[in-house]
Image (spheres, rainbow, N blue to C red):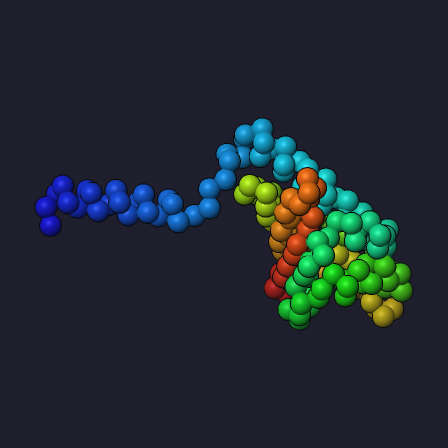
Length: 157
């Protein structure tokens, strides 16, 4: 293969590869930074709603078609199944912390990556969970709502 054709193919491969991934504004841009700040505030509002067993506040933060993928067994839970879990005071939630949060903005969509630490009593038995969490937020009618959360546990030590 001659040298010019090979360089052309390499350049075309790079160009096609770059266009295969979603483009988002640079993280340093004011629009992206502003949106990330708004999403971070919504994340904290949802965390506080869970800690306070505030179903009404959580309801306002979740989209109508919200889906939770449970870390325990991979089952899917709709908004109508998740909200009663938030309001259930019979299983007290002692700790709910997110760490290492990264927020990536793609237009009117935000992907939040973080670690999660949860400690609660389930059925009178203490349970502690540590894992990774991904939440997807979309901007609808000028406000951010969460459309899905997926959690997976770290392997046991």
